[in-house]
Each structure stands twice: as structure tokens, then as C-alpha cells.
Image (tube, rainbow, N blue to C red; front, side):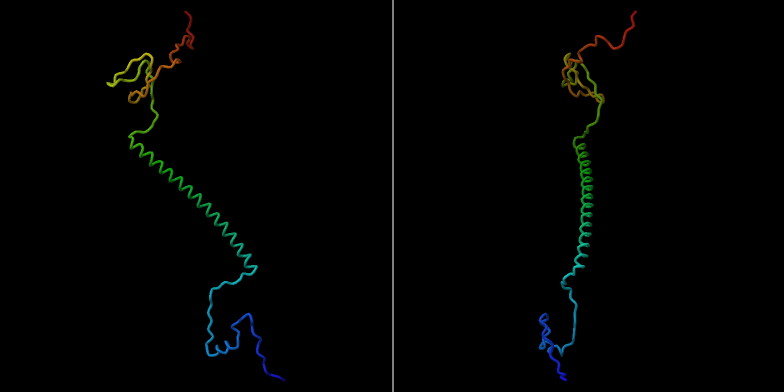
Length: 159
């Protein structure tokens, strides 16, 4: 019987499995270390990762939609606050604001003169504020206001 062992055929996939390199390692301690390195995924791992990716993309879309809605809400609130600031500034700068004020037409007048006296003019009328009696504008009396009602709506009783 032949008890001699033949050397193992060289491992072409592992260049470190060489007899000379192995002989050099005899006097050294075996020491290992783990490193985080790339490893090819299996088909099952690829499918599982694809499912995780899909879920993450859906979550990302949801968060983006919520962020846009929130941003739109904040934008609207900012615009509303800015408008309130602008309105107040404008009122303070002008010292006035627009409000509904009762006015009345005074016929056969054309406003007031420089001394504040009413100008009489049978062809014109003046719109006057009721709160402070200041004239707003004056214009020609329209023809429809000049028409006298010859036949009133109420019937007079015959004597």
C-alpha cells in the first residue's frame, strides 16, 4: 500500500491557497477579522429588497404630499397675516379707512365755494355725507329726476 499523500491540486479560485504561502504562515498566529464588504444578493434577497423599496417609495410620496399640504397651509396663513399687516399699515398711513356712509342728494346746489358756502345752481345736485355734511361730488340733475309725477299712485277721493 502506498501511504504517501499527494498534494492537493492547486485552487485556481483562491490564489492564497499556495504551498509556499501556507508554509510561511506556520510561524504566525491565526488571526481573523470581519469587514463590511459587498456580497452579491440572492434572488430571494433581491425580491425582499424590492418590496422594501416599494414600501419606502410609498411612504416618501405620502410624506411629500403631507409636506406640500402643510407648506400650502403655512403659505396661506403667512399671506393672511401679511394682508392684515398691510391693511393696518395703510389705515394708519392714510388715517382713514373705507366704510359705508349714508349720503343724501341736495338738489339745485353745486357743492360749496372756498368759504364753505353752498353754491346755488338750479341745474345741478350735490351728494352730501350725513355724518359730517361734507360734499362728495356734484353733477347735473338727471332728466328722470326732473320729471314730475303727473298721476300719483294713490287715488284721491272725489268730492
